[in-house]
Structures are given as structure tokens and as C-alpha cells.
Image (cartoon, rainbow, N blue to C red; front, side, top):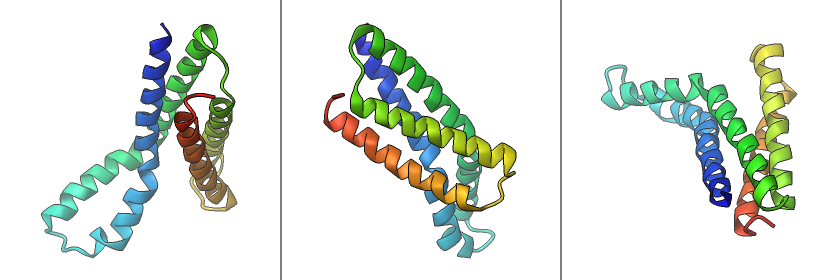
Length: 137
């Protein structure tokens, strides 16, 4: 059963990658894709992919959170509590609350919460990489 912990850990990664694509996809669009002709096939395809990534950003994060909860339960039942995993989980949950605050309370208005949200995303990514490299210590 402990192998399922690893499976759900990697499902967290998949959810996070899809979630984290939100910022770079918008950035690439603003810098390069938006300058292409309206009839450009590249612009049409990119815009379609961007709409999916941006529209479902919060659902990808929700998926990652569900996988995080499952991963944590399995790890606690069949292995141990990892310090690096706990740090990564706290950062992810904190960032989820910030994202919810920004979406539902601030109504997507940019302010300091957005920069904190992005900064914690970077810290959480680094914490997850450390967790994987240290093999769950």
C-alpha cells in the first residue's frame, strides 16, 4: 500500500504543473503570441490552450490538493511524517487559501496577495523538489 503514496505524490506533481502553467502561459502570450497576426494558426492554437490552462487553474489546484490529502493519509498510515513533505504541504495549503482569497474575496483584483501567492508558489515548488531529492526525509 505504501507504493500508492508515491503514486499520489506524482499525481500532486501533475496537478501542480498544470496549475503553475497559468503564469508562464499568460507571460508568453503577452510577450510574443499577442504580436502575431489575428489569422495566425499558432496564435489560434496557443489561445485555445491558454484558455484551458487559465480557466481551469483553480480546478488543477483543487486536484493537487485532493491528491495531497490522499498522499498525506497514505504516508501517515504506512510510512512516516516527512519534515520536507510537511513544509511543502503547509506551503501548498497556504497558497491554496491565498488563491481562494484572491478569486472569491478580492474578485481577481491585483494587489499584494497576488505577489505573495506567486512567491509562495515558487517556495512550494522548491520545497517539493527538496522533498523528492531528499527522498521524503
